[in-house]
View 1 (cartoon, one colour):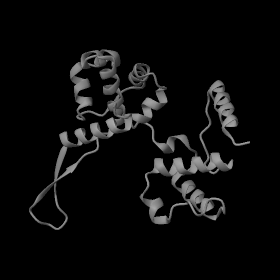
View 2 (cartoon, rainbow, N blue to C red):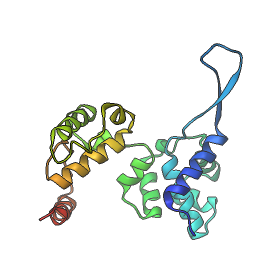
View 3 (cartoon, rainbow, N blue to C red):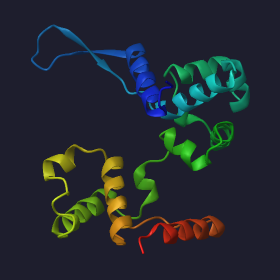
Length: 198
């Protein structure tokens, strides 16, 4: 049975973490050294590139050629010694084309864009206001996370919960950035209109 993409991402992130140990002193002041792993920025995009190259049966040299970097530079990125987010937009566009995904998705996977980049104003404040509104909604209040649960969730997970709530209850809680491409905006609006419960 083939592994899901999420499982492959988790495995590859653990591999990256094991390759990039960082030794720090523990908090109690003892001389003991503990290993603390570094998160590789952009590992999600690196994993997608590696998965796609395996799927297509191409070597790393080919990936470097596609991106427009030297093989050594690509190896440095793939092993976490260089940041994939430092690549120029045109190189990220080439990666997106190789992966058959939109450039903005490649930029997000590379950690060039954050969740905040897709919303106007302070996203954290909007999420806090949204969860309070969800807790006060009789149809939702039994399902809304507690303050402690909410604080432990990543910003992506919290944003996703609020966006699902917006979709189900046809409410607009988050101020989104406008899409400048009119055709894409119209397509997304049509999709949104078709998904709404009747």
